[in-house]
Image (cartoon, rainbow, N blue to C red; front, side):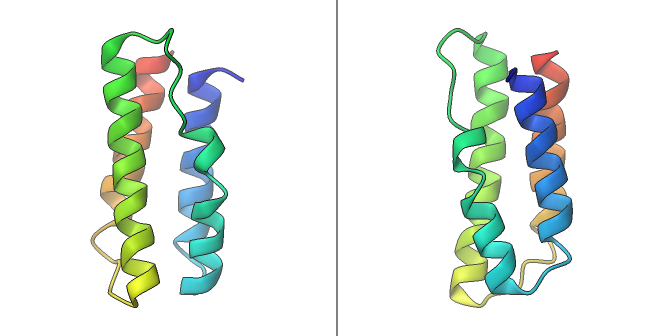
Length: 89
């Protein structure tokens, strides 16, 4: 699976998880770990974008785990994944 395909899956999962209760969303985010692992053969800007998406997803996961609001975290995570996808093409 290419990085662009991985990013597309991440975007799809983020959009779906956003509509779910916290525990379900957290479980869905945990399932993304395999998709956001780095590929050493990618250009630096793709790796930076992938890392940014990963960190944004982690922020959502932490907030969900702690029972904190996540309203302002979903859009930046989706934006980061979209940036990753655009650079990976």
